[in-house]
Image (cartoon, rainbow, N blue to C red; front, side, top):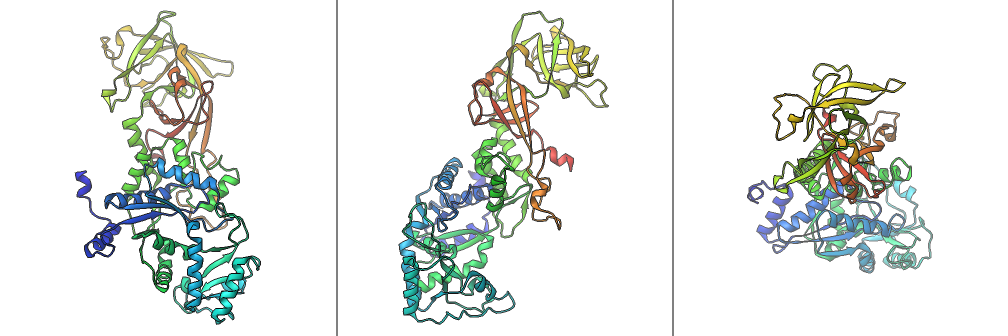
Length: 556
């Protein structure tokens, strides 16, 4: 706690502190997290969640969860429930749960008020015609031929839009601001459009819906939000946010923009994520290769690791690309402290210890987690036959290889030193079995053999082994920055064909048959793993969360 007290304030906290000093909001801090329920939340939303809820917690304020449900064609109850679950999973509880659709009646009244004030008009131009007359940043736009309709005509047309008299695309309500403004968003922006689709909450009551830019600030005002924290792309929208509130003469929150999260080797665009899901490039919104919170959760990421990641990247004023290795560092750090250890063999070779008594089983002791010795030890069965990793044996090893070799010695972790005496192969020349001897005086914790070996490898006893499916996940894309695609290439051309490797007959300790979905583990020497929801007692399934070390850094 003391470290946090001395931590320097980010620029948003500096603004809040100044508002508190001057009494602008009476010392209140009230934020909101306002996702559109048109997809699943991702790691970028997690940054915003941690920021908005974190500010409310720091200043003893409040934070609302508000669904921006102003576009019925893309929004579904499924997404609402997923958002709610993800926010709770991250460890936050909102003070109020609201929907933009809660305010549709009030928003409509305010639209009529703007018309009566001569600040809004119904435009009969098509979307294409409006776009063509908007101009460019250096060329003023052209006023609509319908811009100077009377208040009475505009009210009549807008009410008929609401009554469903007109077809989609035939009319919109636009703000009447300045077609020569250097800010394109102030050139008579669209406030309402016709959409004859049922809404997930209001059904068919409405056939006109407010645009995000219209609803956003007005919903903030209704809820008494003090600090409306948005990502940087909304900075150019702020003048419109302020203009609408000022024209209506209502309570005025402060919009503040911060840099959105861009993460290497992935995409954050909901449109692109939807394309990956619907195109079958991944297996649903919770595919562990996606940056969605449901995907990260399934992969074994913890709320604590994600919150720590959000804290480490901080709050910036300019967009930048964050290396995914920082996120991986955060989950390694968390799981290293908290994940129990176990042993698994992904690509097994059988080792027969020829001088170990047949039929004998003994229990060797291993710490549950060396980072938390207070958790105590577990007992691991050991016997005459064990499985080891195929990579842990090499007939003709290079210099510096300290694992098992013909005639070489290695320690079986927690157990004994063994020496390889015979290599057995099948007709194709593939190694199928190693015959070894062990040194009874070399048992871990009570070694009196005097032997010194450089290598220690993991293993699973044959008589206590079970089979499992293990899914090895890797980065979804082969290039770090997907905003920098070579000309003539599509972003999907860079999907990593090796982002998932499925091992159907991995060897695990039988104790893992009791693992429940979501349980996390360190498979010793292999990495951190999570029990997948597909798991069953008959066929346990484990997902690799992350390797023990950053192997990509070495490759680069």
